[in-house]
Figure (tube, rainbow, N blue to C red):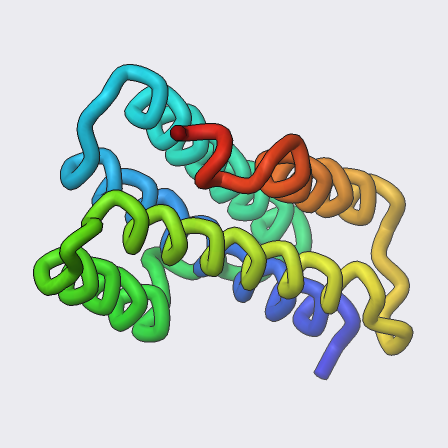
Length: 150
């Protein structure tokens, strides 16, 4: 596997994760009411859509093809969010837990790619990934998602 293909494969994994996150935030927006929670979810969906656009551009720079949609794992996670919300007595709390879980998984995937000793990322790619990762981390560490939206 050539170097650019290896980097692009990792970036494509993150691209799928961002597609999945954007869809998940939009799903939650449809299910939860309130101005502060809707603003938070709308902002996160837009942010992750922006990350996806940046990742697509970066993948194309490597001469590879970007993924076109989310992952099966993301589809299953959103179906799980719907199911939990449907049967839960506290739909809001259940959805917020799933959002938080998804964000933590995204953070972990960014860290895996950034910490992969087998690939030295070009500075521009590494900088972009760190910026994305730090933005995801900030939404989790300012306060947890439950406290932000209480």
